[in-house]
Image 1: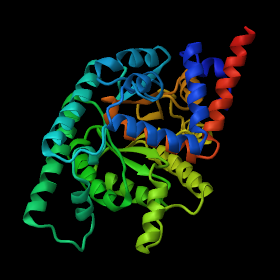
Image 2: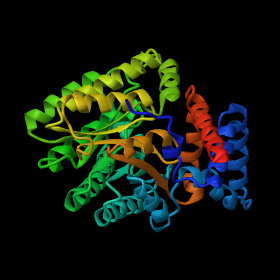
Image 3: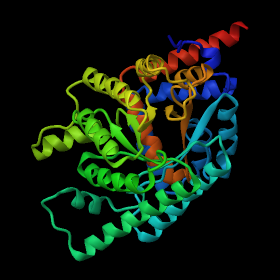
Length: 389
């Protein structure tokens, strides 16, 4: 059994000031009203040019982001590594629409690959396809009944070329890269392109990873199909397994448009599929590689048990546990302390550009039952432990 209650290990890297900041942030995030007011006031202040970037940088940005640039992330990378935790640099800007911005983002992602090549403390790179492509073209390409115009075909080709450029850089530098999952109405497009990249670059090892969101009720069947594809084509299939980040949006759209929701009927069904996927992947680890992105203690325990059952060593490089920076340190640090491979997603980017990511983090913490309460109780436990010593 893994103990997730050892707060001395969980917060060893945190100063008293760090714990105090995290305590107040999670207190605020735990209140939907405070989150709503905070989002409105922050966006308004930034839009009218009020000088609040310094406050943001010292609070929510410091909790959940590594810095504004790759060099600024170095202290975070080094601190995580000191406790056996790797870094996944995540350039977290959103909402761009021009080719110039997309090309600049591609170059930034390739810079993270080069940083990983030079530094073993950075085991993976990552990107979102919507960071380098217009959403609308991915959505149109997702519908098999829709014929793309010549101009749209050209735009889609440019998107695929950008993805290929990143994946080729990952392959040439021997740095695995995650392609994040997104909304269902663009995900088929992403899945198709990602598989094409795997067929091209995953012949010797898993370089390109697809992401499966297990809050979708169809993903376990999809995983089984993809394993068969991997074996048929003799490739190594990389999988980042997550529960998912677009649940409310997915349900709302399904209701508005009158189609069956792609989302699991309840949390138990999602948890069951996630844990079943862990077992299935480990059973097929000869042709798969796994990054289990989860803030769920039970799933971390299940993965450890399945690895032991199949006689896979804790430090087997084909299997990683992962959590987000600033969250679930009780999982990351306790699992790493036992000798498993662990990495933290470390978002970075200019403060104003990263705000949509940060505000979504606040929303997700508010909507996930028990998440904020668990974070707060552990922080309070550690503060009390330190006060006694």
